[in-house]
Length: 488
Image (cartoon, rainbow, N blue to C red; front, side, top):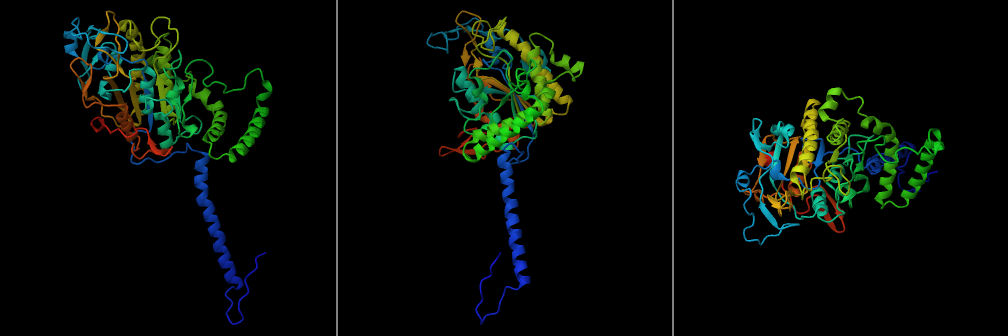
């Protein structure tokens, strides 16, 4: 019951029944409007992966990053150095004062594979990568890359997060934080590890750091029958399937929500709840996405998925196409693993002993899968909206490692290439010295790659920030510029 205030006897009453209803209706409308205005942020809080608008018009909607872990040799693949070939066999360090990461420099060593010009652009590429050579007119090469570390782990952290120390958000996490996802039934950020194992540094490479935990990458196995570990209840517990599973999940949801409501500052709780909800949807979507039986025989042949050596990476690349086709925002593919026993060669690109053996193997793997991916994206009309990035944590030296046939680590020079989503194909940016030892023209770091990728996605790398420990953090830290020379 509402009691109106008494009016003085010498004043005219202003609260007639009609005026009261008019005022009350306005007040109720205001309350309703406030509730509606508060509802949108509440929904966003419950769905941090809801699609968001960027800072400007985007050229790309999704990213596929191919990471060649172990350090691919740029002078044997993308960076043509005829002077190095001419000096093969001559001392790289005549004074004997230099020290590489793990060895004294040996003699200069040109590429073991001849280089040729390809495409209308006439870009140089080695015979190690014959199929990718046919795609040079789609690719923009950044030949002047540098890293701040010669150690695999820290250099990989830097390439992924912009920092050599672990614990900072990865690029995929920043992208999903800034843009959300266009797919409700699959993770926004998917990682496809090499079937042989995890890369140097492990899962930290796709961690969310101080960003809300929901933005960390979700690993999906590209081989085998179980794409995501523990997605389905074990066969040992048949009572947890069917209706019993649904009831158990609903009860668990109630407990989790009550627990999270008392701890609103803990993003990991909300991320865990979102993960459980997504897991329920993934029980339907993940098997369908990873099931390649519906692909044509021509597509399977394109990716060589039945080949014992090339097939696993080809399957990763095909799965990446299927993921972006279904709205996944960021897919990271690892070509090479660490701490695994390989049957024939080193388990990644870290060719200290024998470049011909190791790069000969991994070159065929990368060449088959990456070339197929570009062609397949193009045939599906996805290449224009998908940014493809191929990188490594650093390069390798232009001299032999000691007296052997390997190459040591080289953080002062390597190559990254991009294709698709707003990139001008058939071009190059920056250069190394005449031997491929150091970046000399337009030295470029991961900050610039990140800034360029974010720009193509419609995000300003200086405005994409998150407040943490008194600092407005960003993917590019205090560095980075957009490489406009490679933009279409």
